[in-house]
Length: 144
Image (cartoon, rainbow, N blue to C red; front, side, top):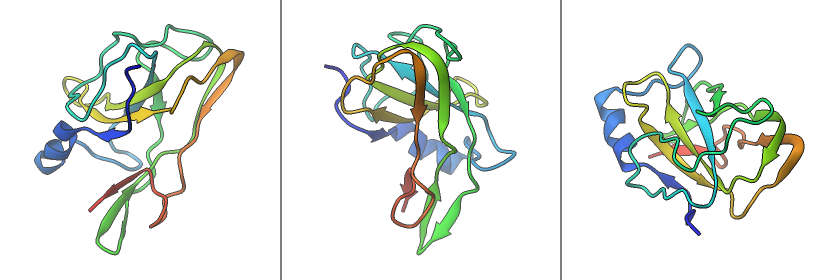
């Protein structure tokens, strides 16, 4: 079992200070790639990899799906970041988790690791990755 939790990647935290990532409409293109349970991701993950990624199926392509970034919000000194829900149609696979990465920046730097807390099976079905609303209590990423 390789997925052991959700992690904001350490390299991402440093790259924020370096101006590598731009969120919000008109910003960088972020992608969500799906992985089987042999993928080994931690907070030390630095970049996208195709190793152990789900194969192309339905509307899912290797490399993952492009995310639509919401405008970041500043709330009580915390930056809130989230995305529009992502739908893959007609897929036939069973991912255990995902990696969100910046497809615009050189080297496809990792943002975060998402553990689905178990296998999510879709057999010629739709698979939707839902993100919480961008509020002070429920944003996907909260940067203090």
